Image (cartoon, rainbow, N blue to C red):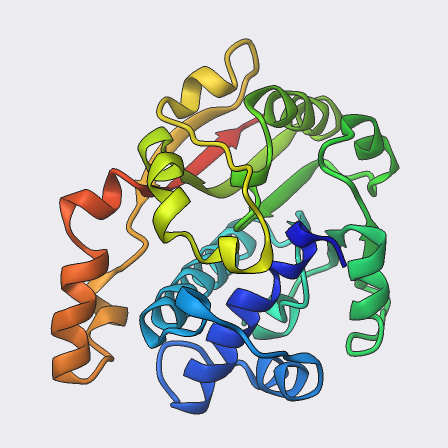
Length: 263
């Protein structure tokens, strides 16, 4: 796998580690896959603080996906940049059509662990090539899970990709985490993806400006460290985690946006 693809092992490790503790995220598939595919991580990638953070992020995306499916059970779910994640198994709501998308080599690796079914498929997709959107399944509305991927794409690439999605689907419900420009600068010193060789990242300060000219607009900003999840940590860990990830400085680095296009 290339350097960007290797980043999928960082959240996989974190989810496996925290799932074993029976807090925040129940993810037996992460435990299984990490046991078979994992390798020695170094530096920030293997800290328990990042593991907490990655697990909380996954749980937030899970809960949001459930809430969107509850509102629109007929929607197509597209998990873009799915890696080896098991969200398709963790969500509680029934879905009619779910497609996990990633680079061809990642999809090939997924097939070892995730069998396709009538309502679950996997599809190779390079987000940097917006023309590939036309190959995605047809639907009236789509739920777009865009976790941990925006920072590897330029503003132009994001605009073209989401423009293609907007053209294909009448309604879009999107959840997307982003680094800020300050976060990208800070990442030269603190970002765990550096441990697997990634050096080029992109930040967003004005989310609506990225999608200028499209119908997509931001409807909400969500916390990446909600109290109900932070409070599941042991007292000392909770105190330190709050110092690292819940202050104003963290929001200046990393943010979570919900976007929408309604028919």
